Length: 253
Figure (cartoon, rainbow, N blue to C red):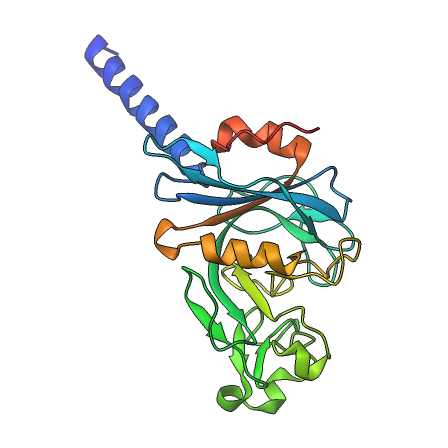
């Protein structure tokens, strides 16, 4: 093999290696806002959320103090998002775990006709459901009975107007987390950020918080800044920080 061919092959190898590395990055420069949630372990139900935004030099800057959140009643397991598939326990339907990883944030939703937010907003009515029934053609999708009929939502535990169907205000204000975007059956469904019952009451797999913190989050988020949610145990966050170009967490007291 002559030197010119060797050099060409080395350049091609380097290009392919760089391409693979680039494709492993779940966060791009277009993502200008991060809602970062960390817990103390894979099984903790409580955590902290810190908001970060890029400055004019594209460096992450914290724009909030850490605030309290609760997550799934059995902690965390790897979800399906913008990150590559990870080794370890994977999120499945009904496991009571919040999905770990990096996820796009979608529309805001709630009981009110409008809220202050830079996201698109969906006002829910009594016919709105998110389908968590395995085997349903609408699995992990938001539907309305006016469009799909009452039979299509049978068995779903995710009526979006919980004030009407469950007599609580958990979904009074919330944000869709784009977990399992291809709607893989049984891989976990209907993941949101929403209001909590209390600071010691976990969810079925969502991330929940006080209404004042939700109001601040909604007002800060801007769809044009392509916001993401990062949710990981603290030690996993440290391990992924360099590879995923994550911001430094505030120092623990």
